Length: 354
Ligand code: NCD
Ligand code: ZN
Image 1 (cartoon, protein in one colour):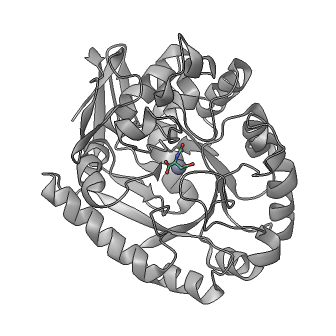
Image 2 (cartoon, rainbow, N blue to C red; image 1 turned 90 degrees about the vertical axis):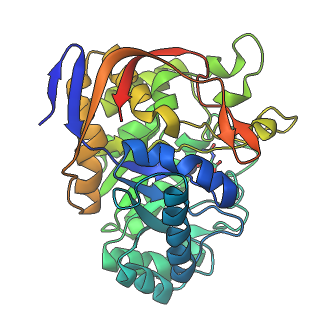
């Protein structure tokens, strides 16, 4: 149980169920930020080249823990939960191998071309991946879904809602027992589908989609640090996401989608998609829950619903948040360049005690 008064909140230690850590110097720069606040994180496999085999996932896991140690973090207190990147050629054997490794917890679907490093993604889910999906369903491992259609004729703001009809519903009709996490939902349609659908489905929600609508991208000029995929939507959608995340429903849980890109690649003629939120993730979520008077629902969302859905034990440690003003840094080091966190320079009313 969380203990709460108006100025302090102590919750079960949270987990991040959707995280991009990158590799090499970038990994070393960011991994300790996540490990400070979270006990576990689902690690996205969209490296270059993508993590498509169990062997690659285990090697990547080793690099993550080594980088954390090198960055001064405690590798004994943080568990990376690895994932595989689904391709048209992923075999059922590879899925079973992943499951048996005990270190791979899910498989990620990127529709080809939908987002950063998704070129090797899936071109025809039910046509090309039926065997892999069957294997996932059999071993009870979740399929994590980037839910946007890639049809260039579809408006970028409509790609998630149309994905629900064209891909999500047929997928779940064909594999009704498959555990599915609809990642980083951004729309009312996505939230309502997950809330009402039959069978094992859940969704992650990012801090940026709870705190901002699409006006944030254009306020006073183009602001690339508010650009991520799926893109921020209009206010009605933000309100639906806040309602879902703070409803207490076990189908909604925390996934930051923290996605670091060097400052120069964000502030660019063709800027990369992704917001860096690992630095201040729990501060951002606490701000969003506090804004609607639902801090009492933060613990379920951040610390209970995720492990319950994945069939993992809840953490035993704690995390305390205090109502204290926290100024988000303008930038943080990122290898030999820098990284601009979401809402850089702004002040939040909550600080995580770490
Ligand atoms: C992610 C990235 O940069 O890897 N970007 C993003 O905008 N969220 C990819 C993704 O999750 O779509
Ligand atoms: Zn992501």
